[in-house]
Image (cartoon, rainbow, N blue to C red; front, top):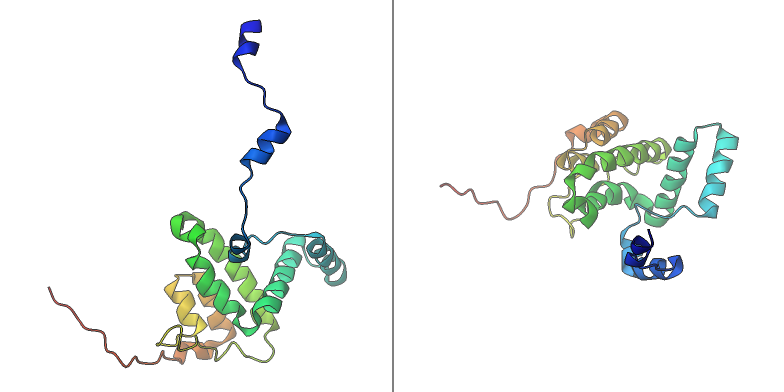
Length: 177
């Protein structure tokens, strides 16, 4: 028994924790807003929403997250979550995580669409400097193959089904082999 104890090296817990923690830079924190930390303020807002509106904890958490996203991105909130979030490195490297991301995006999209009283989202198009075809949010959700998000957008704004993307000046060349 004493031979086994001599074979192991004992490392104090504090030293091991300090050595194993990766240093997070400001860009890493800003880039990954999906896993935004839930601070005390977040939980107080969730608790208040549960008491006042009598909704479930999950729904209250989603509503508070949607509020934070709307505060941060304004009218571009849906563009950010539908177009930018799936492009993050975390999801490009692991496509098996995309269905869980779609579920989160669909919940947030439903909440944002319920609150859209001005109908700003109805005619929203991607700015021409980002994409010359200027797709709508419905086009972006369909390109990502987000079925539930596409369905929510089409149910809330059926007119999006009839909007075309703009033609590009440069016609794509067809290559024949």
